[in-house]
Image 1 (cartoon, rainbow, N blue to C red):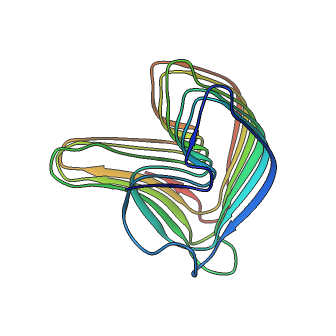
Image 2: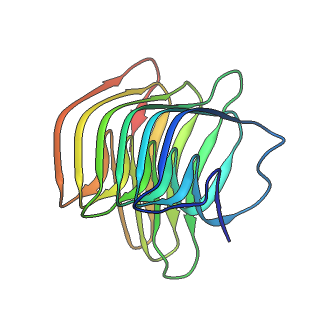
Length: 193
């Protein structure tokens, strides 16, 4: 139950110069993993643009990749537009939920570099778990890899909720990796909670 424009990108795989728009006609149900470009990437994703104009729900959800163990660079994600949009990391029972503007989870050998995320007014990144852990972040919900040079503009909401543990952040929900040269702007009615 995985979804991505290119599915699984292997170590040797390269995706470059792609522009994707998800609207009301493209997504219909709950996924285990969803990524705007790939549900899992161990390769290289460069110079892509993804715009969401449709609510999407998955246990692990990323604007570009649900899980990244490769390189994502020079790319941007826009959440919302003319309509309000919710990208929702949702997990039942004891499972964990993670959602991020770029990736749900950035693995230990993953690198995210020179990326931009815009969460428009009335739109949100929302991680919700029943009794597991919920992670929500402007770039990554959970990071054990490296994030270098990111610009996040929040006019909507980033939130994590759980009866267990919940972590939300303008850049990363929870990180044991590195994060340098990041810039966050919370404008208008933007909120992190």
